[in-house]
Amino acid sequence: MNTTRRTFLKTTAGLAGVATLGLTVKKAKPRLAFSTLGCPTWPLAKIVKTAVAEKYEAIEIRGLEKEMFLPKRPEFSTSIAESRRLFADNNLKICNLGSSANLHWMDAAKRQKNMDEAKRFIELAQQLACPYVRVFPNDLPKDQDRQQTINLISENLLELGTYAKDANVTVLLESHGEVVWKDVLLEILQKAGHPNVGLIWDIFNMWSVTKEPPAEVYQTLKKYIRHTHIKDGRMVAGKPAYTFIGKGEAPLQEAIDALKAGGYSGYYSLEWEKMWHPEIPEPELAFADYPKAIQHYF
Image (cartoon, rainbow, N blue to C red; front, side):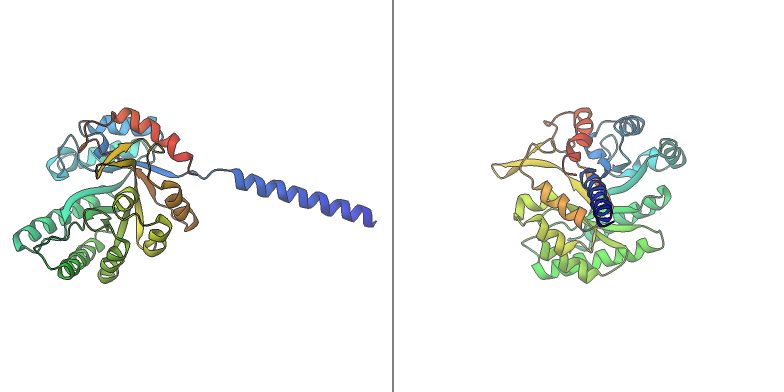
């Protein structure tokens, strides 16, 4: 009787171990998107066709055919219904609209111009059922008081969050420009303090300047992270030289491990900066490489 019971317990434990092992080795499937910054000359139909072919879940719209102010394009003005249908018919989401709005300007006219652009993008996001609009902090100009600039960025972010609430849109500040230090971003986001305000964590943007460990960055800012920009590269003579994922020096494994451990459920969006760096490989190659390359980190 005892032998039978011991055999049963041993067998049960073994099966449990196999089950646990199965759960351990199974890789998570990240939610993938790419930014249209990577294909600056492509029409919308080709962007959607490529996303479907390469098995992306969503597209981040950052310009279309080199027009960065989306409301100037018919696809996002007079033909919005057709654009929404194109995405719906292909089971794709628009996960983010990337505006060019900068929140650091103290000059009244420049401030108003940038805030107006952000608000126009919020209105467009509502029409497209897109959850997020990106804005830049963006700089800490030497001719402006540093603390006053930080306070102004927070005030502008709060105003945009309030504007976005009724549209069911969240405004995301990207770690970008001179505002890439985790403690400065935390101060801005805490002062804004609005449920319709969050952060895009651009891992390479931050690390290439600050060298702050991604695990520390995540612990500091995890409350606010809603979206990520993924890219890789090396710093050459103080400037980024972009590579395919896994071929550069960005500490992506540490960052992705932190995101996974923290329960991050947003998109891992490839930001292939072809618009600004025409010398890098063509978008067809980058968009095909990314889903395979990113899986190694999971």
